[in-house]
Length: 127
Image (cartoon, rainbow, N blue to C red; front, side, top):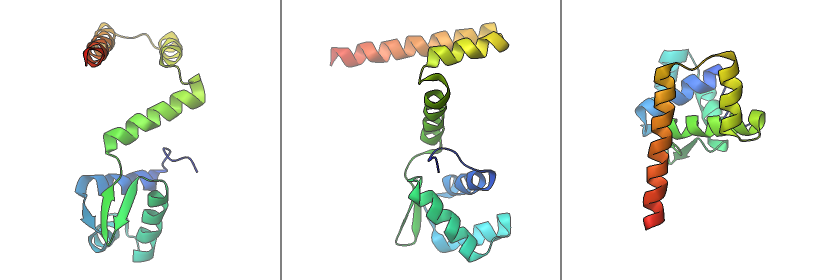
């Protein structure tokens, strides 16, 4: 199973944890019963699955995220690029923009991201 691909219920469960972490595992069971109509065993099975994928950790009954939701989404994007575009963001953008033209606003946002990246890189080089 790929670590950064989640099924619908895995994603909803992960979102529940990210919204409330750190959360006691007993509280998580109650939340899942209310939100998903799950039994205790279902909650613990799902938690174990996502802990094995290093998304969460259950440390003495306290569930914490190993990465933020934003870090997870970044890792998903990296995995998608690697699997579909040989890891190349420019190749992805070229393919994407062939089917859907970027708006002026989107182009400006991309330029801003590149400029910020270049500034950070220049700052790191000065250290």
